[in-house]
Image 1: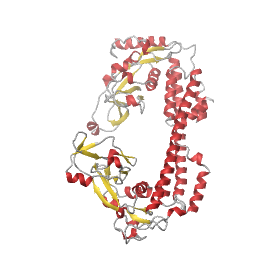
Image 2: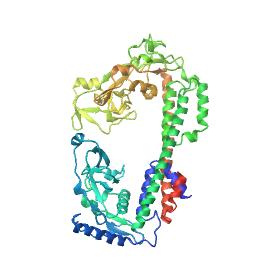
Image 3: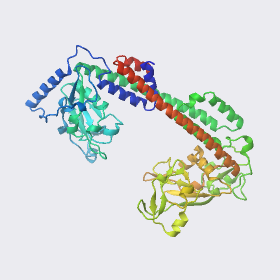
Image 4: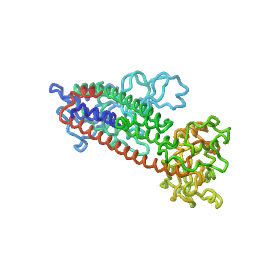
Amino acid sequence: MRPTEGFQLLATAPEGMTRLRKLIFSLAVMGKLVPQEQTDEPARVLLQEIRTEKNRRIATGTIKAEKPSTEIDDKEKPYSLPANWEWVRFGNVSINRDGERVPVSSADREKRAKLYDYYGASGVIDKIDGYLFDKTLLLIGEDGANLINRSTPIAFLATGKYWVNNHAHVVDATHDVVMQYLCLFINAISLEPYVTGTAQPKMNQAKLNDIVVALPPIKEQSRIVAKVDELMRLCDELENRGRLEAEQHARLTATLFDALAASESPHALAENWSRIAAHFDLLLDRPEAVDALERTILELAVRGLLLPVDERDGTTSRVDETATANAVEQADEATHDSLNVAPYEIPSSWSWIRFGEIMRDLRYGTSAKCDYKVDGIPVLRIPNLKNGRISTEDLKFGALTTQETARLALVPGDLLLIRSNGSATLVGSAALVREESRDFAFAGYLMRIRLREDVALSTYIMLALETEGVRAQIEGPIRSTSGVKNINSTEVSGLQFPLPPLETQCRIVDRVDDLRRLCADLRERLVARQACQTRFAEALVEQAASTAPLAAGRDDLAAAA
């Protein structure tokens, strides 16, 4: 397989473009991105030029004399260099200008005009009315988590007139191309050996100057910088095309699955499914598409379309002795007034109901302070609700009164629902209480719903609460107080969804569980395939790069783009 195909595989793999960029930078600073030229002056000649120029500037008082650097030990050299390259300390080939930085507080900046870029550790963070520098310089983040996780480039070139605070090192050089090469070198390597602190990572000036740099001849630096710039532009093009393809795929699957979920009859469902089945391998080729299919399964389940016709019906679902098919219209018309008309048809033995009609009890949790070391009973909190289940890994305890303990005691089959959270998508999400959480209490941001077992199966209600129709009803009335989203008991009680006969609910839950297991298996296989694709592509491209410089790298990437 040609490197072109390897680039295509890598570009379409998860985080593939990030890996491809990292690979290009790594190859560049190892001398494997562009060919070496016999006529290039060795890097030692450049080193002598830099020393001479820095000594001249020290003599004229332009810069200060630096502390002598230590010799580079062989253990500090991570790989062998091409001929004419040299291992050097960062401080020996750069000029530090940190002393010219001036931090300005955000409060003071607010009082000043917004004219020039104001730089911090991660780039431009504000504007200000003055500038400290008026030439292109290299800025390197001095502190922050990005020194470790590298979610954005840690080194970047600042141009024009600008201001820099004390969270970014300011670096100059005797040659512009050296500064450009140092920028890509810092972005290519791990800085962890030079970082101190874990909670607040920091790379001080001494550590920065100690970094061991692989220095090529100056003409080769020019070729490397030009090649990297060229390949980064092609990576951007590949990434944009990949993003567009992903968006188009998502729209396609959403359209087809929406049509499937909106099927009004078994015949329409069969027709819509045939269109998907014909292209199943193309549509379900990524985990996100399986997620969309799983959501569609839930929609079909509550419409009565997942089961054969003879299994959909049962004893007519009645929430009480006087309930009829128009139970929705008898509910509180002041709540969800626009939903008084059933959104779609359901089997004749099913009923449209309000959630409150099948509740035996709805109760908010305790406001008592809970902690890990309190001598009391376990109190479930929002972090204990995960993917519809109760997690007991991070329990806090509360010293509740006997009356509150009895009032809030959970039993298997209860539903815990999040009523207040900073994320609208979490508000209204629920978890099913099972035996391991019996007699636990629950916190005030949760509400407990205890169902009428004679008409409702808790596992079916859990499915109904996940459907798009119910989620729209939950998120519609959500209010926000100081950034916290809330829904109250009246709004939860007013949620509308179809209720099948009890025996049909059991069959639906079993069917959905079977299909979800298939979805989980398919999703796992797709994730494994993507991981394998990434490893294979990386190995292929690196092997091609290790045998010869990527002189044709542009052509390969261009073909992939």
